Image 1 (spheres, helix red, strand yellow):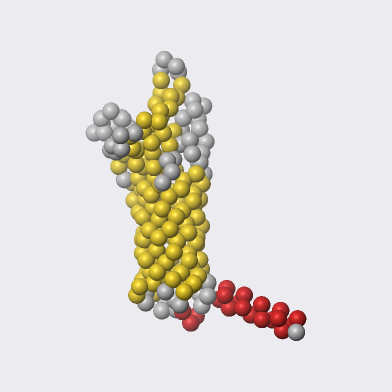
Image 2: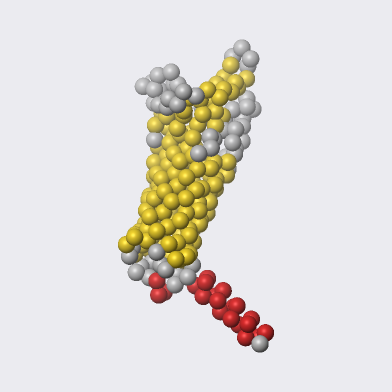
Length: 219
């Protein structure tokens, strides 16, 4: 009896795992840093730049092939472009503020068509290049990133054909990632202010391939 029960447990676990689809994705998109003042006014010194993302996702059906849970792990380049002159964006061109994250999205998916899934959820991210310079600021940065973590919402669309996967996702911070930072010549140090708060905002387009899938569920 114990052997039969053990075999049933192994079979059920194997069947559950067989329903999991694991895919590798990589792609590019627009990345931006959104500054907001205490009055809710958005500072427009930043402009969108190009960033990249790469990682793996796992999708598991939870309700009759229409509802899925998806999780993943990605390495992403975020950041934005900003004028080298903070007082006149038309001068001296622009330079890139790069911020790199390892992030893990968790989404609920709804399959509304054989090859399409709507998806929405949250993401948690940890910044990797979090090393201040000798002056207490960050090189090539106008923001002081006092938060190593980024937390926000993610929503998008998943399209699958056979073993190929295409996704588009919009991500935006809920928790601020930085505050205004400026050099004070009188105090000879970086001075921080909470008057302007910074948030990440990204739109990624990714293309991928299913590394593991239940053959019966392939389109």
